[in-house]
Length: 368
Image 1: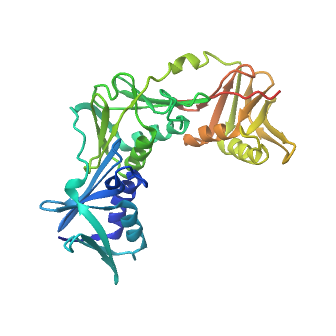
Image 2: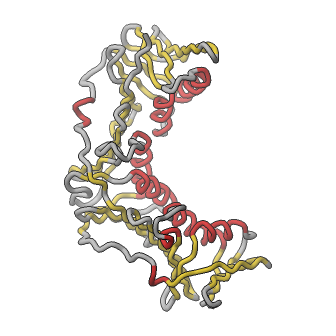
Image 3: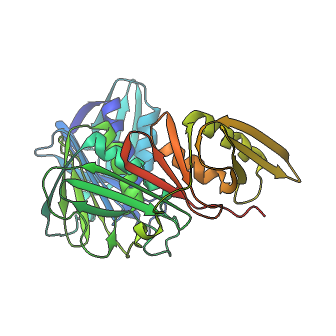
């Protein structure tokens, strides 16, 4: 079977698929992508058993199924000149990839050896616009724990209320939440389960690239997202009970500081150069019309900077992890941010003007 396809189109299929395939899988076939090659189109599948992605271009009727190493195929296609790429499956266990005088013959295995999709009883759970889906994921995933042993913190919490979908994440030192509207009803996640952060990060990239309405389907232990063009991403849910994050959200504040995001981010980045301890600890001082950033290190020196601000409340000093603050500031596209604070050891709440659907908390650091 022979297919000619634009290199750019083939890369759009292979890049997300290869990001799923494990580099050192326990089962070698999981390091492959499953190809269904026909004269008029191609389908690409990839899975690590927890996440499965299916994408298609054109018509794959009467195609030939085979698998090929995901990283090798991606590197080959990336190396080719711009223009059309020809895929030929009919060479005794080799996939011939050619373009502009270059020819590669890659070893393949039978497509029947590739793991089939897991069986689930899917039920409709509404739909979400792709741009909103990408936004809400990007505003929370940075705060999820990367420790696989911290059950309840190493995934993304999802809750639905009427026409609203809300995501939340925390690693114990920071918290992020964001919500967006959806059509339809039905729970996306049922019971004590979380969505995997790597799966949602990939979903955000796919949704940003393919706008339109994404359909959501839910099962007892999985959730699936399907784009208008037929891209389907399913992910197995993580066992774990997310903490009641509303209990740690302060009921009020005694100091509020509104600053330009670029000014605060710039100051924190410069301070983090000097803040060499493992927690990147810096001091923020609330003054009458500024937020002053300082840090000291015996090895790397001192730094200070004054950021203009609109201040409501009395002066105080508070220690923060500069990296955590930068992650939170970078998660939301806004020209300004408001920091709500109480006492020096109370949580810092970040809110963005004009946005009641997103927020973040960063826990302070001791500076004595």
